[in-house]
Length: 360
DNA sequence: AAATCGGGGAC
DNA sequence: GTCCCAGATTT
Image (cartoon, rainbow, N blue to C red; front, side):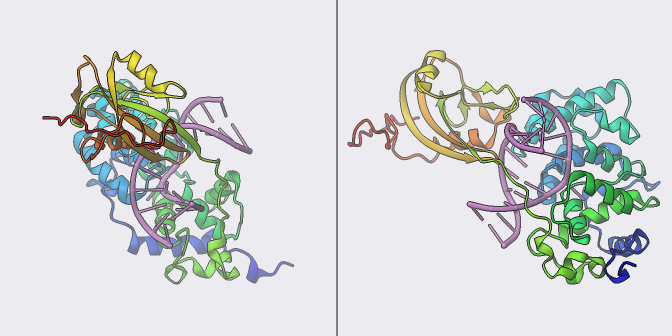
């Protein structure tokens, strides 16, 4: 016969414990507002869930407030140009979220808004987590979410060192309170975000501490083990600035990386500067400096040159730009000396800098 | 199953 | 520097 003292406690024990805590400590967040009938606006729930993918709440909140003010409903979003949506997303990262959100809005405007998990899952940018979140939070469907918070909380609750996706979903499904699915999902996520944190969980404040196997083990932060990461790729590229920090020649990027955003013309590899000059009919390049930009899987070093060309610049502020391009443009704002070549260029050991003509 | 896709918070 | 963040999509 198994030792009952070491068995994890069941749903009947855990549900009331966590929900009672949630009723008192739920975070006050703008997408949680309800109407007179106690219902949430599915559009606001949807927008928030897309914004919060891999984005911390404090940060997503700022973008959410601005986004729903500019696009208060599905129709206004569907009617907007993609570029306006990207501009509202500027600086938030993972821009495929904005592109897919906009694409889905146009699909909804042409058909109707889904009301079920399966319906939401069929839309671009909506995966298993987001479909479960929207269907439970806005429509009361009994679907258990599986995000980073849920994974960590359940891994500790059951002392599972390497919780797989299937395992987490199975535990989440079993624990979900079918009477309050939305509240249960948010309770688990609030707990993970405020109490059961990655580095130093605040176990004394946790409503589940008496039931947590990882805490009983003495080192709850050891669960789960960190996921392996692929090595960061190092990239070197050259950018050309025609114009100045306020008005410059920009290109719209294509492809998955920063796709849809605008930025300085860029080339990679051998002869990058020469190819840029030829492609843009530019001349008299002057080295402005380098900017380094780190992303999760990329470490980009950009050598920025200023050059002259007949190409017309445009107002930089009107376009959506990545942080990388804002850094590159900032070289022209607070610059000191400019160089014909990078100071570290191995061609000669003598510095050959010269003053750049003052811009008026 | 593993890579790719941003940028920043917290340590 | 590390790991992580209300993940989804592509390879």
